[in-house]
Image (cartoon, rainbow, N blue to C red):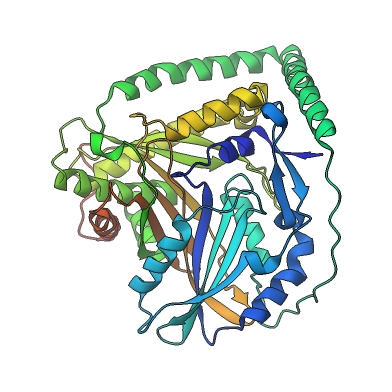
Length: 466
């Protein structure tokens, strides 16, 4: 039986009426648009490469075990591939409005958890693809791999013809329940046995990890006591505002040459400027206030691709919105990220993720759903940076011009930012609760201004950072 990992099950159980947990994107292409039939045939020909696209989720009775992936005996690709158009003139704003409505709607949890929309009518003879995939199915790195279902690196690439498919019969209800109970007993034992064996073989390494984890506690306590803007946390409604910010990798390179830092450091500094403007406009800017972001990090091994479950951990970073100097803000973010890298080098992130296997699935289902619906003041935003390909991508011979990422929101955090790079472009996709963010453009404009300021050669180096 193909059972979800603990991390994937957490994303599945976090799904709720006002908290759809799919990731998505909008890809814009040069014209002319393919026909709907051509796109359907393209996907049908490539689906055998990723069986998960024809599987649905089957839960275990009473949640006595993590959910299973089983073939959908009623799979119909015409349900998952859809066709629409924007009205004239087909502006970027009209595409954003359409995409915001499509991406804000929940997937049907009884069917395979993905959708693809063909969008025609864009200005300048362009067209688009809106894609949605549930977070329990992929993370940012794996979803880049899944795009190979649609994208080619060669405009003249041949495409396989669609073939027949027969679904495999799923396990009986009794077998599902028995397997769940067995997992409930055996998995923690296996995990504990492996941990004890490792401790016996290398007790010094265990001690180093314990000290590293212990060093996290004072910092965590300090962060919890640091004030954050109250308006950024709260109940989440069913509707979304989604905008994107366009930038270039050349700007990031100019910042790196002048002031140092990684791409992650620099994009977080730009996001900090956006939140500083937003918090100031809301009258919540104070001397010691911060905006705390969760930054997912991949724990995949180098060269590990084609794995369709989530291989991610996360770090928490305080965006220093109270600091007026943009270069001091950048220096602060560099220090925080460097410290996280140091600790992640000592603490095995894979082992931390594996600790989720100890959580009883019934408690995971209840706890994750409760957390997803409960406002918490600890974190205000999720910021995800996914590096995309550095060479052109094509769909049915048409080159992709841009891609904009969509990251879900939940747990009382009313905004998320998905950052994606492609060729020389860099885009920030800002997804926010509709009612809580009527001023989402203030955040977006501030991100754009923040990166431009850092890339300005007249900005002086940091002199008073500590």
